[in-house]
Structure formats: structure tokens, C-alpha cells
Length: 239
Image 1 (cartoon, helix red, strand yellow):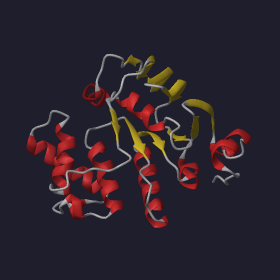
Image 2: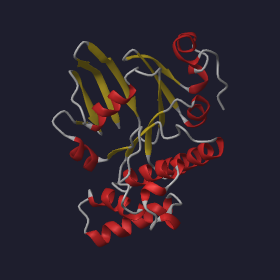
Image 3: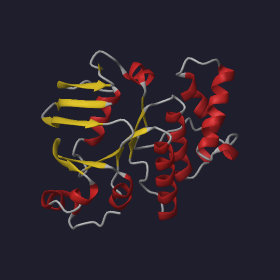
């Protein structure tokens, strides 16, 4: 589904991503981990079209995305959330999700129907008339997912969606991701909560100093000496 080929991103005096290559197959949940500053969000920005790589290419369902911006990539089926959630604070939860649904080219009435269905799907329906800025962090993060989901993605990029959540909220988020995945949605997930990502990921990519250090199933990654040295510090039990 997603094929990242030899992507490099250079900023002034800094190589943020260094010849990174990987694939995400349809139906997978793939984790992307690494230290702060490893280039994970920059890689998301390349995939979603927010920045252009210095070199390399991104293919989605066999189509080269090089000439496409974020809106066109979204229409093809790539959705994303952001590490710092920024809903339209003065708008209701429903209207926030309507904004996402409108990117499909729907009429406003159809977009509201899509938004309501999406909120129900994420168990946010009872908050539809709540002003977004008044939601607690866990619900703002879920709203971020809802807004992305309303665009109709085939692949959803989640950027630290579990950051700052308590264990109960993390478990609810994991269950939600698994439920959406069982319905056919593919995920690429940046996450620092290692015990959480290891529970749901089929494959884990490890980025360090912009380069892909290794990749593999969680049980292998958590005991890889290089990964332990540069990031984990100690082995983590995967389930």
C-alpha cells in the first residue's frame, strides 16, 4: 500500500531523514519508534505531502505521489493526526468533524451525516454539541482521530495519539485502533508508549538520527541490542 523509497530530507545544516525505505502493507498496523529528534514526524510530513523530500519517493497503492500536495494525497486515502492536537476550539465537536468530511466533496448535509456517523463510530456522539476547547485531552485526541477518519482514509498516520493519556485511556485508544483495523483501515503509528505500541503493531520500524536502524515484529525489536542501546534502555515484554 505505502512504499517509501530511499527518502532523504535535508534542512539547513541538518539531515532530518537519511535514505529511509520501508513499506506498509494493506491491513497492517505498523509502529514507528525512535528517540526524540529521530525524524519520525518529518517522515510523516513527507508521506502526507506537507514537505517535499530532498531525494527519494513515496508511492501509495502504486502511484508516485511526488507531484501531489496534502489535499490530493488525502483524497487518495492518506489521513493523519498531529502530535499537538489543535481542534477548532470555538466550534462544536460535530462541526470539527464536518470540516474533515467536507474534504470528500460532499454537500454540507451529507458531511454532517458523515460526521455524526464518525462520532458514533468513535463513541463521541454524546459530545457533538460540546465546544471542542472544553474537552479533556483524551477526548480532544479522539476528536483528532475522528476529524481525520471523516476524510475517508485507507491509511491513517497517528502521531503520538496516546501521549499524555492515563492507562485506562491508553487501553481505550488501543481497542479503538484495533476495531478500526479489523474494519479494514491500515495504520502507521508514531508512539513513545512502548508497551502500548508493542501490543498492537504487526511490524515496528526503528528510526535513529534520521536513518532506519532496523525493523521487525515487536518480539524481535524489543530484544534487539541496537534498539535497546539507542532507545529502549532495557528489553520490553511484548504481548
